[in-house]
Image (tube, rainbow over all chains, first blue to last red; front, side, top):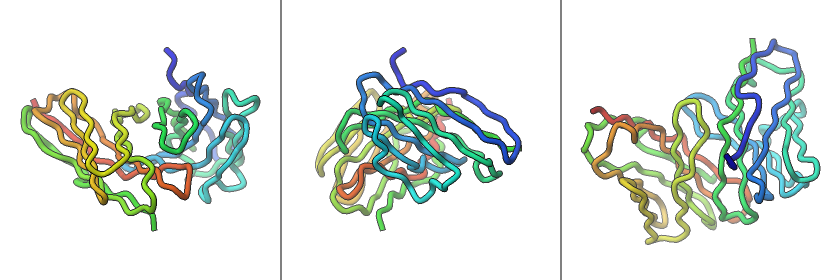
Amino acid sequence: DTGVSQNPRHKITKRGQNVTFRCDPISEHNRLYWYRQTLGQGPEFLTYFQNEAQLEKSRLLSDRFSAERPKGSFSTLEIQRTEQGDSAMYLCASSLNGDDQPQHFGDGTRLSIL
Amino acid sequence: EDQVTQSPEALRLQEGESSSLNCSYTVSGLRGLFWYRQDPGKGPEFLFTLYSAGEEKEKERLKATLTKKESFLHITAPKPEDSATYLCAVGYSSASKIIFGSGTRLSIRP
């Protein structure tokens, strides 16, 4: 399967712990996006990379959140000192270069904060 | 403010009963309007991109159309396997991100 891959699929952690998620995009895609989705809502943009450069970050992305994409391949999203409000589905998408290109999504990581 | 609104929030149809879902948008400089299907516990699955008013795209029982202010996703003679949440998203000229609507939960009864 050559789609977007995300790991882990589920993560349960205690409040205050740090968590890290991984995303492997479609190989020929140089753009990679992170979104957060809560129940009954559409995905909300968090940040995106073009190759290894992080070009835009949402106001939703507090200083507890950090994303990296070393060498322009896979990406990681880390949340430090997790809070109850961080419980959500974290989705990764990738696309070819261009703002008019469709984004292709992985199946997400569901984060639950105890 | 750039915004995407989908209606209805939920729609229940009998198998074979055709209907339409609406996506209205207020953005400056539309770069593309995207339709996705999302099944429970899965990520959104790309369906269509529409770029300019008057454009139409079709796939099986689905047909998407676009005007300057809204898009419609028409579903003809739906089957139970068409049950899902359908999401609309818009890309616009002042940003590289896309904005999603809240989706329409479609349920098709056999």
